[in-house]
Length: 157
View 1 (tube, rainbow, N blue to C red):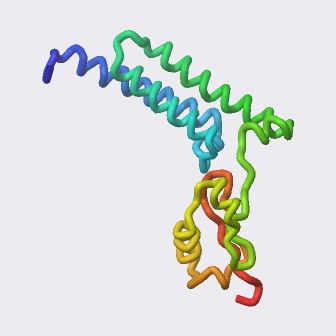
View 2: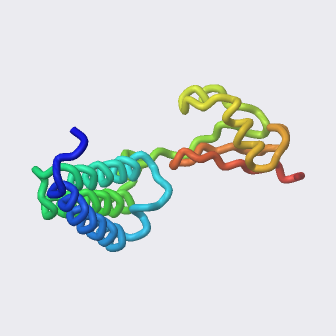
View 3: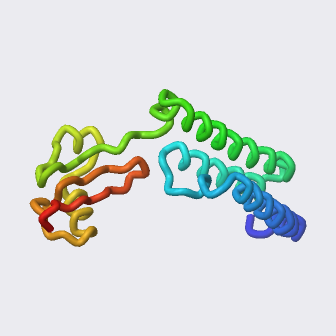
């Protein structure tokens, strides 16, 4: 079906605008944490918010109030988990990965590479991206909790 009438288009425009304003409001209330560099938990919440927005926009079976409630539920759950993880090491370890060294003093750490599913080529790319020519110049490459790699040069450079 290409065109089912203007009623669906008008509904999508009105509900879409209202849902968008509501989502932006929820994100502003919940703070910068919701939009920060993502660990796995943050990514899940972000994808769920996007899926909820799409459902509210395109499904006539979901009312705007239900969609806004879902936004608030997801943002509230993220806030609760984040708040709890700040106060509990056990929850923090469950929710967030720990940074992991992948290269130390110019030498790759094969067990860490295998466990984190990172190739030596990816390490080399991170080193080049940090402005260094080869791994001999590097003291440490860390895989951070958000999936990025930090490169720390040897002190003599």
